[in-house]
Each structure stands twice: as C-alpha cells, then as structure tokens.
Length: 287
Image 1 (tube, rainbow, N blue to C red):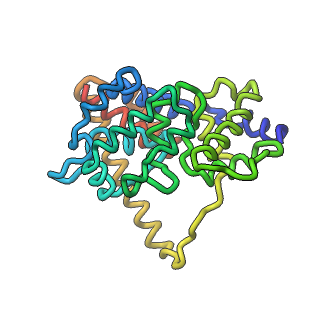
Image 2: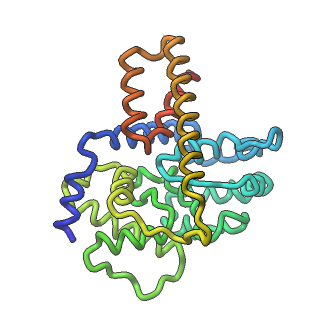
C-alpha cells in the first residue's frame, strides 16, 4: 500500500491552498483554547453557565458550542439540533463532569470516549460531539485525529494500513476508536512526507483521497433541477455576504487592497474552505 499512498501524498495540495485553510483552522482552535483554558485550569470549567451552552431567549446556540459547531467547522463538521443543546443546558453539571474527564491527563483516549456521554440524550451512540470536544482539548498530545465517525476510521484503515490487525473483539467503543486512530497515526509517522503534517491536514488528505462510501442513501431522490437551483441561489447569497464583509473591513482600514484581492481569490479557488475564511474575517472585524 505504501507505493500508491506515497504517490497520493506527493500529489496532494500542490498549490498549498488547503494548508492555508488548515493553518487558519488551527489558529482558531488556539483562540478557542485561549478562551476556554480548561486544560491549564480545570477549575475554570465550573464558570460555564447555561447561556454558554444555549440561550433560551432568543433561542440560539451559546458561545461555547458556537465555537465548536461554526468557528471550528473546518476541523470537523457537526450538526446539532437545538433539542440537544437544551438537554446539555438542562444537565450542565453532568456536562461539566464530562469536561473534567476530557481534560484529565491521567485518562486514556479510550476512557475519555467511553465516559458517560450518553447520560445526555443525543450525545451517545457514536459520540461524534464528544469526540470533537476531546480532540479540541487534547490535540497537542498527538494521539488523536479529528475524525469522529468510527466507520470512517475503519474505512481509512482498510485503505492505507498494510494488513490491518484488527483485534478479534473490542470491549468498548473507546478502545476501538483508540486502536483505529493509532493505526492511522502509525502510517502517518512512517512517511517522512507526512510526519510533520498537522493532524487536521492529514485527516483532510484521507477524506480527499479515500472518501468513505455514502451511507443511508435516500429512498426518494430529490429533484435534481430544484436542488441545483437552490444551491446556486445559496451560493450567490453567500458571495454577496462575503463581499459585504470585505467591503466593511476595507472601510474600517482593516484590509488592504491586496488582501481584498487575495481573499477573493481564496473564495473562488477553495470553496471547501469558505467557512473558515469567513469566520477569520469576522473575528478580524470584531477586534
């Protein structure tokens, strides 16, 4: 497997545009960690209040999860329903206890995934939300990837691990997750070209080069023309909002003409990184 894999590695992101997007995402992650210093000061977890999770009036996500779901979307996509936020808000003490486990250096990755997240309805099953939280507070350890779907990990292992030696039986979901992550990181470390890659950059490489098969195809296909028209209108709306944001930044003297052009080029050439670009500009506007 090494030969074909190495070819894909060397052909990946030749313009460097994807790396720019990942570097921006990591910058936002460091901002998140500076704001929520739970690793350095676990006692600060207790300062979380219900509105940090979900604001009942006017019914919107609180700042903690706004970071996780929106600002840090390029690190791993999450789609949460307001009912999940409301349950976390209602069970805030349970959630704080889970955060304490998340930042505990004595706990293994498996133990952190296997913590009782299912006490809060909507956070159990494959624990996608929990895995993203765990990644964001443990990424510097280098033993976790921002891949939150266990079936995706199995797929990637089958694609790039030479003769993967899956244990005959896993005791827990966390043990399975930790094992699959270690297998993929073993491949990452085996290639000089990928050893220095940021963890999200390696994950992006896997998704771009070995996309997992689509699961749960809809029984009734959406009308293609209607969907295409909707996508076009949505993209046009997003572009208008993006230009308005650039114009406001330039009016306030926070963006040069050259930077204006470069951001416009990134928008055109890297549509998959538009979210991170917009969030970085919004943060610049608020400074």
